[in-house]
Amino acid sequence: MREGVRPKALARVMNVLLQSGGQHAATVGVRLARPLAGGLLALACLQPALAAERLVVLSSDIAEIAVALGKASEVVGRDRASKAPELAAATDIGSSRSLSAEPVMRLKPTLVIGTELAQPPAIYQQLETLGVKTAKLGAKADGSDYAQVIRAMGKLVNAQANAEKLATDWEASMRQAGMPPVAGKPPRVLITYDGKVVGGRNTASDTLIRAAGGVNAADSIDGYKPLNPEAVAGLAPDIVLIGEHNRAVYGSLDQFRARPDIAATPAGKQGKVFEIVVQKYFTVNLHSPAVVQELRARF
Image (cartoon, rainbow, N blue to C red; front, side, top):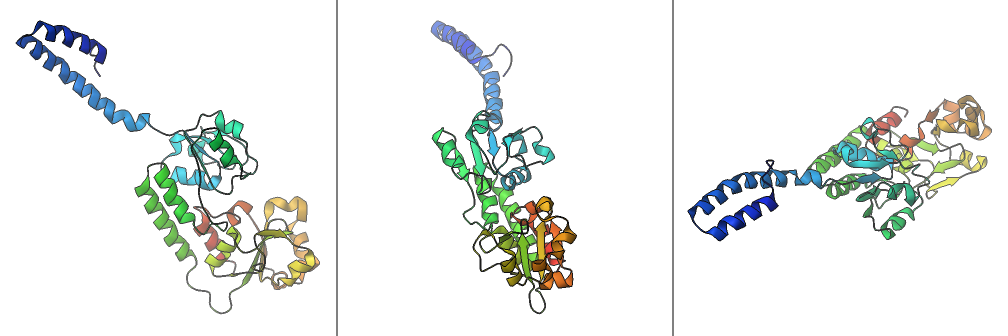
């Protein structure tokens, strides 16, 4: 809007002119209205920018979707594991495993989004009670509905078209990563967090194993559960993957391989015991197609 042609000032001028009556008033009014109309049009065009969300993303899987959808500039808060360069300006609200409402509320968010990775589960209700619009996406513990999470995120942040393309491409990449079908008997794969806790059915680990064409050696277990050494040996995995960041628990990879229960398995005998990055194998996210390919290469 041009300097000097403000709505209140225009109203006062028009009122005086109209009270005087006459053609001059109408002419001047039209001349003044033209720049005002242009200013109002420009203001209308700015409305989407003015209405931008103040997003807080509670978990890394949601953070990476926000970046992929071009919404990084709207993210004012992120969990500690979300380290994308595009989110460098966003405030660290703490670990997604132990969140509290206070750091989130300080950021005055208009929308908070996360998945079940955000803990404790009560964080969502706490924020809702404080009057913040909150969305927990993903209904399946194993992450197999991740494409739907992408689509739901797109609706929340007004990026449906981009989200649909992202979800469709991700689904195609996941299918391609597991091709061609495994020839012969699929390998039994065991994914363990620290040498004790293993990923059973209804887990992201299970989803990734199946996508690669393998069989989850721990599919008799529901969720992530600790097992004693005898039980681990009884699973008879052909491949064992262990989180590398837990070496303080299991020692070096050589020490883990030498454990009697591991050495007794087909994986131990065939030298198919590997260290992995836990975040890659314990969550389903945009990078999962590459993880499936990585796992498939170890078959």
